[in-house]
Length: 265
Image (cartoon, rainbow, N blue to C red):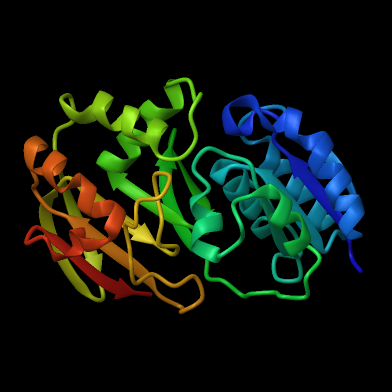
C-alpha cells in the first residue's frame, strides 16, 4: 500500500485530539497503514505541511482533526506540484465534522481508521474562492462549503468561543452572539449568467451538504456532480430566522419563500 503522511491537529475537537492521537496511531498501525506523522502548530500550518508532503512525493495525506484541518490539508494538496495524484484521507476528531458527514466517512474515529485502508476512492469537486486581502488577490479552495454574510460572521464568532461541546452547540453559540448585531448585506450575485443585486442574510455555495455541525444546508448537494449548489437566504429578519432555524437541520428550509436554491458550475 501507499506510505501516508498523517497531519494531526492536536487542538481540534476542543483540544481533545492530542489525547486521542495515541489511540488513533495504534489503530492506524493495527489496520496496516504505513505512515509517518506531523503535528500542526497553529492556523495555516496544515496547508504548508500538506503542500510540502504532496510536493515531496507523498501520494496519500491524511487529516486528523476537524473541518478546518481538512480544509487546510486540501488546500495544501491543491497548491502543491502534484494536486491530482494525491489522495486525501480523513479521521474526524473535530466538533462539527460536516465534511465527513457529507462524504460518508464515519464520524467515529475507530471506524474511520479502517476506512483509510479500504480501496474505495472517490473523486470530488473542489470550489475556488478568490478574494482581496491587503491589496493582493488570494485563492482558497474549499471541499465542503463557502459562506458569505451571516454564516461567515457566525463562524468568526464561533472561533472565539471555547469549544467544550461537539456537534452544533458551538455554532449555535456563535449564531446567538451574532444575531442582534448583524445587518443583512447587499450583494451582487452572478449565477448561471444572470446577475442581480439583492439584500441577503446569507449566501452559501455548497459542494457538500452539511454545515454548522449537522445543518442540512444544501440537501441536494453532491460532492462529485460537477456542480455547486448556491443557497441564497434573502432579506430575512432576526425572529423569522430563529423561527426557521429548526428547518435547516431537516433541510426543509429550502421551501421557505425567501430561500432560493440553484445549481451552477
